[in-house]
Length: 141
Ligand SMILES: [Zn+2]
Image (tube, rainbow, N blue to C red; front, top):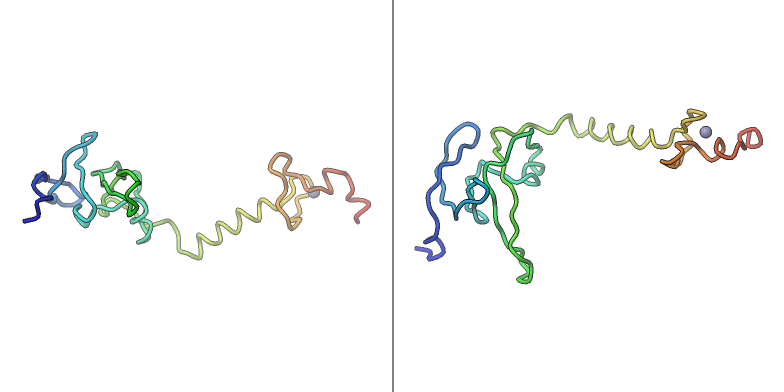
C-alpha cells in the first residue's frame, strides 16, 4: 500500500455520461482535486483535449488536477479537468483551419483604401498601404 494514498478518499465524478468512482485528494472550489495520473481517464485538461482534436465545448470544469513541475523550485500548479464526453471536436478539418488562418493573414495585407493585396501587412492603426498613406500611387504607377 502506497502511504501517499492514505489521505485520499473516494469521490464520484460525473464524466458527462457515467458516474466514475475515483480517489481524490480533497476538494477545492467545490471540485474534487486529483494528483497527476490519479484522475479518471475520461477527464482531460484543455491542452490534453486539444492534443486529441477536442475542445471543451463551453462546459464547466468537473475536477481539478494538481501537479508539480519536474524542477523542484516550481510550486504546485492547479489546472482544470474537463469531461471528454461533453467535449466536442475542434471545428473543421485541418485543411479548413489552415485556410482560415491563411485568409486571416491575407486580410491583413489588404489595404482599406485601394482594396489591393499589397504583399505586406498594412499597419493596424491605419489599415492603409504606404502608397495610399503617402499618396504616391500615381507616381508608383
Ligand atoms: Zn492602398
